[in-house]
Length: 420
Image (cartoon, rainbow, N blue to C red; front, side, top):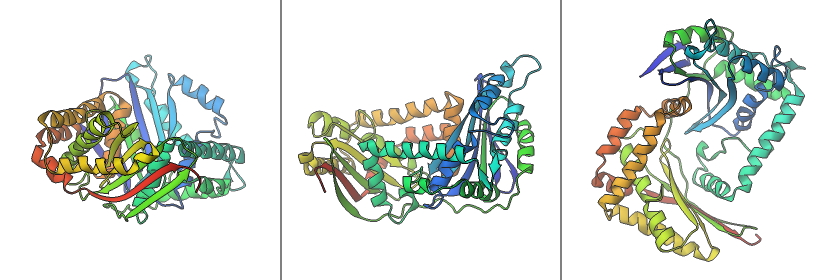
């Protein structure tokens, strides 16, 4: 189903050939080790590249060009995948089969991708100051908006506590202070460095044969001065214990609890850990939602997330300030129930069905396909969707209990009202 072609050292093209869709997609990702010094630069770069090229010098010109390609679109693509951060572009376009006779879309999209990456206007050794300063403001506003969403803010604070010794605690988009000091020259120099040294990961979804896609992309690669530096492998989480309380002018408390596990998406017990997370806190049939929220009314919202690349589970709850100790104790009590096998057949079935339902949606669109398989490849997950579904189906009660017993509370964060 996935055909993989090594275009040159450090450059991989993955193709998912599928004729079901009118739309296709092509992503280009520069894959970097996640680090504080680069995070904001990597987040800013694709937005600046999308502002204009020498042939299409502004947003209007780019839009008009994309309109000639049957309304294609290009967007920035910035991801955090375990120890890695990716930066690049995502192209969505009509599959050639639906274009008018004699027209092609894939080939000019590949050419335009090269244009965006390599032909952004430069002056005085840097990108155009107007482009850079405008996109810096946009990026800072995005970062600040996450602070204003207290649920997102609290979870980011928990990850910083849990991952003091690990890059996974770094924010995906960097921090506002890091964005502010970026200059047109420093961003341009950074772009040249990462185009030269990064692992390049390209992913295509559509009806074209893989070799045809490869041929269309080789001219882009021939223009790059490459000196590839290989990526270190993904590593389990390096975590530290911590318990922090922060006061802020908020009307609702945010309690976050971070757990660690040796089970990652590269482990044989991966599917069991996914089922445990669904059963414990991910969804409206989970123990946390049913018992902590619905039956005991200890919180307004509650849920858990499994960061499978690193081996961490985070629980987040919105609560009244005076309910912290009681809520914390009840969350641990529900985890103990899982460890003791106090799980009904209905709970196990509902947890597995929630995961299977999500997996079934993976092949519903080109973007979903690209999102699953491109991320899986970088994270070290080797399961196809079909393999993943089969593994989930095979999970037993004993498997879930074993996974639960390998979860260890390592850090907590509580955001409460009042002044410091």
